[in-house]
Length: 170
Length: 367
Image (cartoon, rainbow over all chains, first blue to last red; front, side, top):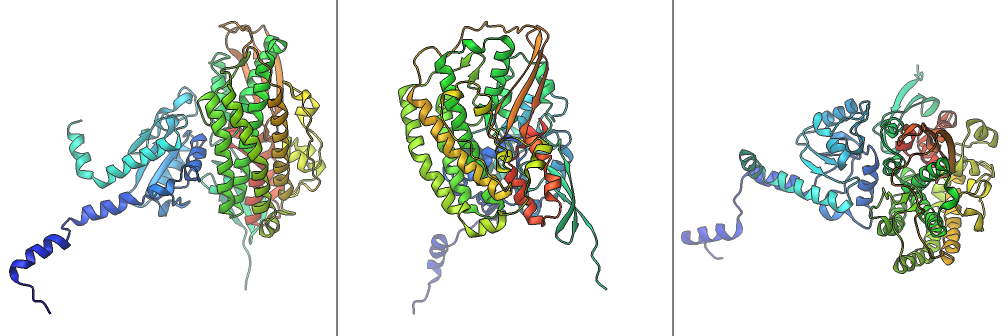
């Protein structure tokens, strides 16, 4: 049996052990499998469904596990128009989700009210009552646009320090 | 001592089986429904009021957002209603009329594919869901190629259509038409011919002919209950009177029949497209319509056979550029009205199937 000499230990550790923080490992894991909430509000929900279908295949990016219960989800995709009657329910669903949780505003209705911004019963954007992480513009956005938004969110989740640094610069 | 207590259960507005944000309050005795009450309005966007602050042309894109599974059909309804109001129905070029018919039927195929997919998902058949969405993408490809948008085409114009179609497009349409019958056969093989699916749907939520008439049910749901009605044949609009197609009618009116009607209709839609694409005439695609539309004072009601039933627009004009009133007669809202009576006495899991088989889109229910 070989005996490891003291001067070889450094080399072995260097080649076989990855040194990192627990946070970085956790963030890496979180970012790679975001579970979205099965939660459609309007038109964009159909586009969200087709992004999970065969042609576009959301499973390639690790977010295909749609869960109907907010307790099992990390990501809320606000897909559609938020009306005043629906707003308290959306807010409650967000509160029911377990930390850490993220919000993606899909489509122009969820960003600003979109084509219905002058309606008397439409909330002008999900960011008026939710902390939105990523905005995906479009009416409705193509599935590819949703994927790009999810990839941006992945970067955001994996590198919180970078985001904090960017925020300092506005 | 055992005793059962009546349970009040909220189905929705956040529930994957309610197809959006529909809420239903159910009273349950064990697992059986004793009473169901519909609550709508969670997606009320005030479209009818918005129409009063938009010009006639500006309202066209909103139709795609109304019933977001069949955008072309909604646009066609609105556009033909305005044309009727202006009295230019006769001036629409032939080519535009044919393109409108082809687009409507392609959209109907896409709508029924999505219906089939969601119906499969609600009976816990995830594989068939993928089949439905696969074929919907093929239909949407054609719509996207012509209009630039997948779901909200904004393709119909008052007086015609926005863009002309080239030979390449018709070649792809031919491919779709050749492909679709085999896809529909697959649907029958994987879902409607499946014994488990039949056990879940046959005899569930039956709607009799009298009940359907009482509630004013239209479209495929009415035809599933044995009412022989189809506006494409009875009140032909556009150039539908030039095509030969059957109107499938079934007797039982249960969930299974409501699915089968859609499957049969897909075959008929393919037939209509085949006939229409053969003799599309050459020529202009837009009638001569003024840039600023000022329809004469008056009112008009126009309805067509949407993928879900009779969709109607009641427009009142006061002679200005904007409508005084725009009322939308929505088939989904009317068809949804039957759900409380249908659900009474049903098992909870069957109620979900019955609701899915009615084919509602909440954007149109709440408007």
